[in-house]
Image (cartoon, rainbow, N blue to C red; front, side):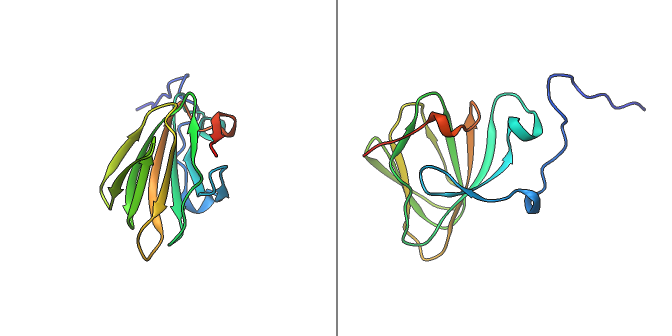
Length: 131
């Protein structure tokens, strides 16, 4: 049997968590890009694991073009969207529409760990910090 790859989907190789180097985004969270067009060649979105330390929060920011989904894996947090708070815990998923000022604070005792799916894919240039 011959397996063919779709020409528009990139190399289709899975990412490996230990090979995904963490870095800090403009909002101050620690991110590991698990899937991103610049690396894997996928087309329309990115997937990252984000971590926020106990007692910490990200900076208020917005993305002009990007819609984000946050899916909490571990810990507790309070997400603010245009100033409106919503408490999140393991298994909860929240949508952040483009243009929405948002930040998340860790309200638990351990690390807040969540998946962040961005469409279109995350770009530093699309992140605007808000005073």
